[in-house]
Amino acid sequence: QVQLAESGGGSVQPGGSLRLSCVASVDTFDGNHIMAWFRQAPRKEREAIAVIDGGGNINYPEYLKGRFTLSKDNAKNTLFLQMNNLEPEDSAMYHCATETRRYFNTQGEYFRRESYRYWGQGTQVTVSS
Image (cartoon, rainbow, N blue to C red; front, side, top):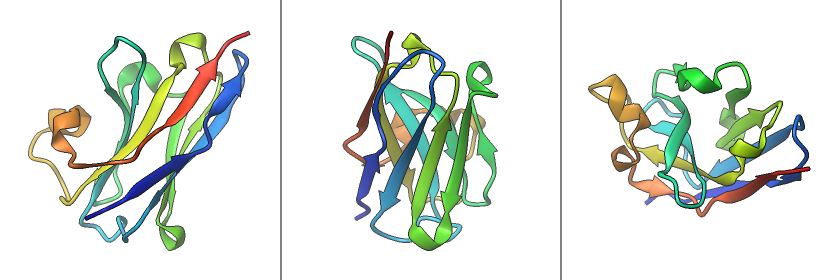
């Protein structure tokens, strides 16, 4: 059983930045876990915004490339999401997730919520002026 705890959310103005953290209860950077950041806005589907596979490869949806950056601190079992130039449309609950796999079989699986069994409770991000 893996437990995940997110933090770092808050309220910022458009154009601002936030850095989210996700601490895992086990070593999820041992090469046998895939980790991801998802977000869910009210009345919208939960969408993946950054993923890292067991080999350390990082991928983002095309529309987010350049504004969000995923990184990790292996020693602290912590995943980060640096978010810059935030827009009101980025307002959502942000969750981290993990699955005990090194890789998925298809690229699409990395971005589907159904692919991940373990989730954190989330941290709220609100972008408004």
